[in-house]
Length: 289
Image (cartoon, rainbow, N blue to C red; front, side, top):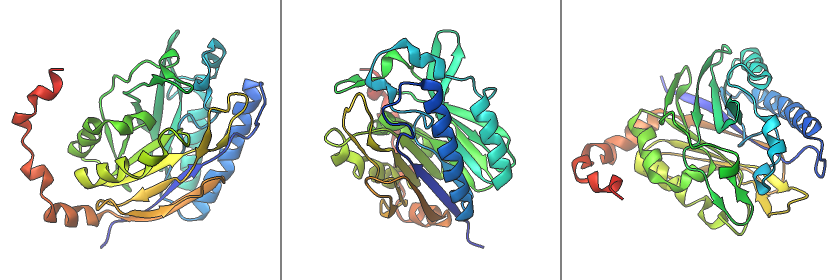
């Protein structure tokens, strides 16, 4: 019997553009996503992934300590508890990226993974933290991830997570493949003119090199008052051959859904024996620099 998983990506704009009320923004974004998650469930999604730090704007466009108050512990914060309830309600595995409070003064850019019964399975903390113009001041907010590259064994497939800037680094993408990932999600926040030309190059390349599915998510719209650029959406799935299967719009809130045939992974790996033909004993110098 074919192993087909219906999977959803959610891309969304800021629900309160121009507002300076952090609590109101967070609530509005959560409320918006509750509706979009409902839409994903209505479309029959077995798995749903949200965008990077889904409950706010991309606040790393400025360096202000006020944003620390939007962080929450995982899994004991109110947002993850709500998402556990929604996962159970919809019988849907969920990948939920939020701003994590690990302890006072220590914060991570993190995605929690929840199974279809509402059980918290674990988390991935973003490893590669940018600090560059224009307006990507992430080292001010996030400590580099320290939890490795976990893969979560769910009813609907083995799921890995790589967050935004991580996608520029093939090493972690390979580690996820070696750890057994069948679907890798990359929730992101990236703007036109900076990385758009790479958007459909790097992640299909990861899918090909590691022979798994990739779900790439980007938010949409322009976020005041920073206006660092246009978040260009175009969330998509690509298969283990690197082919884009379905793609979201450039400007609109959207639930992007695709049916992923997990048996294709075996078919592709039986054709391209990349894991068999690897030469890890020759790669030691990669960690010397």
